[in-house]
Length: 138
Image (tube, rainbow, N blue to C red; front, side, top):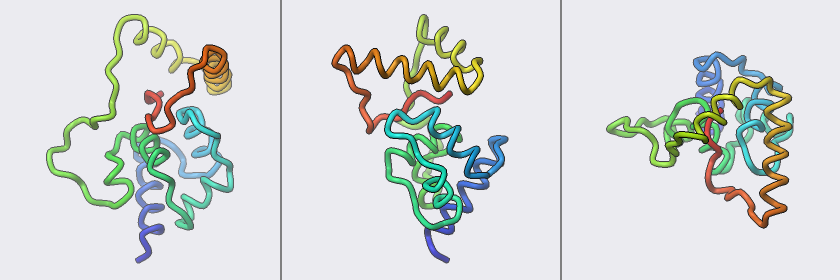
């Protein structure tokens, strides 16, 4: 079977296991809330779910982090030995923990707006999020 089709099956199963309906509109909204780069389009995520394409590594890492899977498993279907926490997970505490807790409790529209405000401040301060690092899971 085609590896793109197998990826799509794993993605749909992971979405369902995480309590999300495996539909393009759901995937588009939830993915874009977590991804710092240019937003994915409805058509782009639909291609993932149909097995027509596989996301680039940086997007795959965001998907895997959100859905609680290892990127390697989501992409290739092979589980790595050890099952330890992903090396790209970022521990937070104190003020960051408080802000993230509040952020996660906000409605989707407010989270998306807050994300845009933060990115605007970052750009105004000469900072640009590193696209190779996934955002903290929401």
